[in-house]
Image (tube, rainbow, N blue to C red):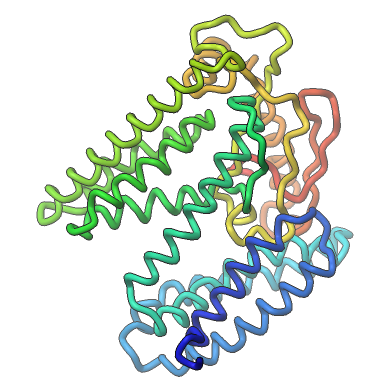
Length: 370
């Protein structure tokens, strides 16, 4: 029976990652379940620190030094934010709710190094692939339903964050370059991840197109052929997947074709999916976002091409753009009022949404707000 129990480093990783995926999206409140999870994650982190310190004379510790230094710096910033937050009257529980997110990120290098000593690289890739695949499915289910692309009979199974499908795409493309035997499989997985972004109508996903030439440039001459094959293969899978999904949607009577005029009652504002901002990643502490309050887009407004056409035709009338402009203004005013130390974690951003309601939250949906 003892042989069936995973090593302690892997168990600690499962507690932090698996527990986070199950607990952190329940509500927006810092409830007892989340506090218990954070306590368990803290205990796991302490034991991981002890295990990693015992590796300080091994080459892998030196290789991970930049990660560990970044982790220490982030932990220091989190600690410094507490007196700043209290000075501006932020309640301690609001600070903790926000700080827990970044604390989990600060713990990542230590937990990763601890787990890496207990498993082979193949198992690491398998675990990363399984976690990000589940996250990608959750992301697609949540946003396809939120934008009215399709009427799904079930909810998102896990955390609907864009960070997990982003990780799946990046890891798959990198593995497709270096893993010759499984190149086709990794290219298929990366293409499906990229295609998932596109079918959800996320315009920000177009930045991923830049990844392909960057990979070939960084790979250099020695890996140019392999990186080119991986990029072309992933791109072909993406194109095929999006085409098949679009053809399926066009055959549905509930979704209008891209070229059809938008219905008069269709919402002008469609929200973008969660970005790769730290507070909206797999370790999204107490920040799981509720469904968008605005009516979901439908027909051409819910497709990537339709959203691009509407944005290019009139950027100032685009609901998504106007929502972000409001968030930029609030973020800039906060920065200008305290450019050195900020307002601390847990500070609420308050802005007026397109439907006239006032939104107050410790995070906003725009990456540069950070």
